[in-house]
Structures are given as structure tokens and as C-alpha cells.
Figure 1 (cartoon, one colour):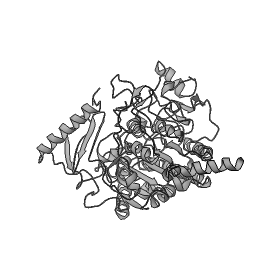
Figure 2: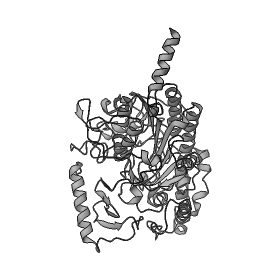
Figure 3: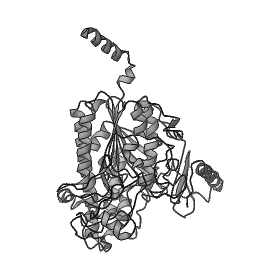
Figure 4: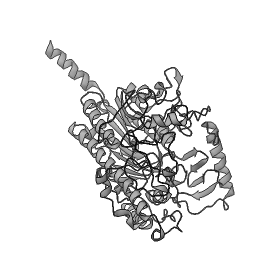
Length: 549
């Protein structure tokens, strides 16, 4: 009887389609405010051997696009539709407009919901940031909460937490900005994490938890989906002293030396063609490093940024090793990208409030060094790299996070899958977008994208599957892409890109021959401007876009 039962089980397994037995595990990793050229395999001097190894044995994408800001990119990535369709046109405030509700719409499904329905186990660690933030009334009450002096049970409406959007397990921060040594809005599942141990560092905790999830999920017969949403290297500039020390002298050379070295390396790697992507002029090129009165502070700021990326890379190495030890690495698709270009923000100028604490849990004052009089790195400072280093991080492109120029929307993207990627070490120029992950994972997981979910009609997918690229074919990507964030916008069709900064005029670029957007051709081609503007307006109407809600 036992032998007969065993034979039936074996026959049942053998009767499954071969592809069904080979559905890959999926690990999706997204960095926060990482510049296009920060990684070693994308031209940077930062030590990222683990990500470099994934790139050398996988695929790098040279024309992969995000939506220029954290919340909108996460919304598009999770749902497979433009971010306004998903309800997050700006940030997490509810502006009572369909495209600007500040949380994922009930008319969308997440990657986790779709994959879970297809038999995948699901888990997430790190930054959520796609739900309405609940604030305490009055600035003092809010600061007490941010400072860990008071506790409240919810950081967002409970129905908007990851575990209510398809993830079985979750550990991370519901809000965006965090103190890396003692994060605000930290939860395990739905329960607030009241205290963290001495020596806590959030990047390490994210990867420690990811490793523990892998050990649990890989022991199951089902494939799994793990979403690792890094908080590094988003400001505040918080890193461990030993990590900062590694980069202590690297950035004393200044903006131009580092930027030009990155550009040379990128051309050598084949990521860019100097004929179509010359190095754009450095932002604020009149400011010379030798005359910079804050050279020491600025060099330290970028050293901390590098240390944060370096520590993240080592954590990703532990994740890869956990997959290897579990015997599942060969059939695991690992994706790595950034949510937007490096940030030009002056975090020190913000001061405490909303999501920024005024003191540590123990009562030490947090300094926002607008005058660059206190070195970044420790818990007691909140600072950022600023626009000039962001311009370096986004080499060779112009502008940065929140802009629709290439420096804001172009992301490094690595795909690694030993069993599934044919041309290892190649660079794909396919025009791709963060909303493509839904279509890609649906195909690879043999999942069904639903027409309705939980009684709500689901908006159709707008992304395109990248699975053909993994197989060594199908380099044709999107023929048109669009974006809008707080008035910054673009329309890209064929060889043309029409783009505007916030409240600025439209500029026209022959993007296939001018990838760094140096030659504005709007005066020479007013007919093209008119046509693309009409295309953008049509897209905006179809996608719930209202630039100034």
C-alpha cells in the first residue's frame, strides 16, 4: 500500500509540466536613492563585489527607468501599472484625488498577491512607504513619537500594511526616512518593535531577517518571492565608523576627479557610448573643489554614502550565500535596482518634524548641520550628500531624484538567474520600466493576473515582460514611456524625449543620439514638441494625472 502511494505521488510529480517544476524563486532587491554610477559594475569606485558578481554572471540593463521618487516607484514596481494608476502620484498624503490617495489603490494587485495566488510563499523586509502615514496632532506630540518617547499602535491604517497586501511575513519600516541606528515605524508583521538591541544597524537587520526568511522559505516545497526594500543609502548619512574609514581619503579628490573617473570606467565597461552620451557638464560647474570651504565635510559626506552602499553590498552577499547554502541559488531570479537617482536634497536644512526626529531615544540632541559644522556619520546628525555629489552619483546624466531628466529616472538594474539567463555578463539596452516586473513575474511563475480581486475590478497591467530578454531574445521594449512627479514630467517616444523640470518649459532632445540631454531642439522642431505634448496630455488623462493637485 505504501509503495503504491509512493508511485502515485511520483507519477503526480512527473505529470506536472516541466516548466511548472522549474518555476524560479524570486528575490527582488531595491536600493534607496542609489545613483546610476555608484556600483562598481556601473562605473563606481565603491566596493560592491557581491553585486558586481551578480552582474558578471547575469544581465545589466542600461536603459531601465523608475518614476523619479521613492513612493511612486514602489507603487509602480509592486502593481505593474503607472504609479498614478496605483494611487500614488506624489507621496503618502491623501489628496482626495484618484491618482493621489497616497496609498496603493484597491483596484490594483501587488506582486505578492498575484504570486501568492499562484502558490508562492511571500515575504518582505525593509521600507514599505506605500501607505498613508498617520501623524500625531501637534508638532510636539509628533516629535515625542519620532524620538521614541511615546508609543502608538499604528503607523498607517492596518489594512495598508504589507501583510494585508499579500506578504505572509514582514519586518521593516512602514514610513520612509529612518534613523539607521534606531528606526522609527519599525514593525514585525503588524506589531510595532518597541526597542532595538544595542549595536543595531538597520541595513544589517534587513539582511539578517532576509537570511532567516530564506532558510525558512527554502525548506518548503513551494517557490518563494522575497522583496528586500533597502533603506540605504537614503539620508540621513548614518554608517559604522569602520566602514567610513575605508573611504576616508577617497573623496578628498573632489567632484570632478571622481566624476570623470566614473565616466571613463563606464565607457570601458560598455555601459555608455561616448558618441551618444558625452559627459554632461557638472552641476554648478563654477564651484571649484579647491575653493570649497567645506571640502573636509563634503569628502566625509560622500565617504559615509559609500560606506552605506558598501555595507548594503555585504548584506546582499549574505543573502546570496543563504540561497546557495539552501541549495536554491541556481533556480532563483535575483533582481537589483534603485528606486530613483541619487538625492540632491539638503536634509540638514529640513530640521526635525514629520518623519525626522529631534533627539535620540536617550535624549541626545540630533544636529541638522546646515552650516556643515558637524561631521556626518553618527546617529546624532541628520545630513545628506547634496546636489553636487548627487550629480557625481548619477554620472553621466543631468539632475537627480524627483526630476524627469535621465539623472532622476534612470536606474542600474541587474538580473541574475543561473538556470534562466542565457547571455551572462551581457548588457541589455532594452527600454524597460519598474512596472515591467509584474508582467515578468507573472510569466515566469505561470501566474494569472486577475481581472478582479477582493471584489474590486483590477486595472490592466501596463508593463511588458522581460522574460524574453533573459532567454536572449526580445530586445524590443517600450515604444513610449511617460512620467509626472510634482510637475516634473516627460514623454519619450521613438528617438524623441520631451521633458520639463518642475514649473519649467518643455525641452526636446533627440534622446537616442543625445542620452545626456545636452542639445535642446524644441525651437527647431516645434511640430514634434506639439505632438509629444499632446501624447503626454492624452497619457495624463488616461492615468489620473493632475500635475498640481
